[in-house]
Image (tube, rainbow, N blue to C red; front, side, top):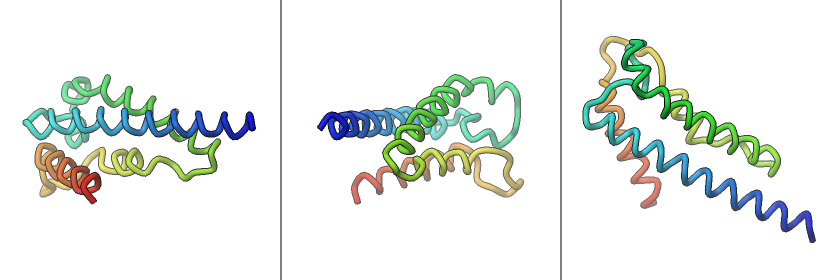
Length: 115
């Protein structure tokens, strides 16, 4: 029984952290959608990267903890974090800007919650 209780608490903590990650990401996406660059690190510019460095570090820390809990629970890695990490970095010159990309992310996340 103790193991089941421990696993239940661990899963509850995982769910709480995933909600926190999502909320932090949405806040950062809203800032980016309003015109502040750096969240997706498209330009590789130090100043814009530095502006979002604390946010990225916090998301990375939360994501690391989530993935650790997921591994202990036998679950796959946290998919939202994997998608976000894959969206960061240099892009082609004709790619949409970070504000438009952030807006698309916000729309997609809203659709996920609704659906």
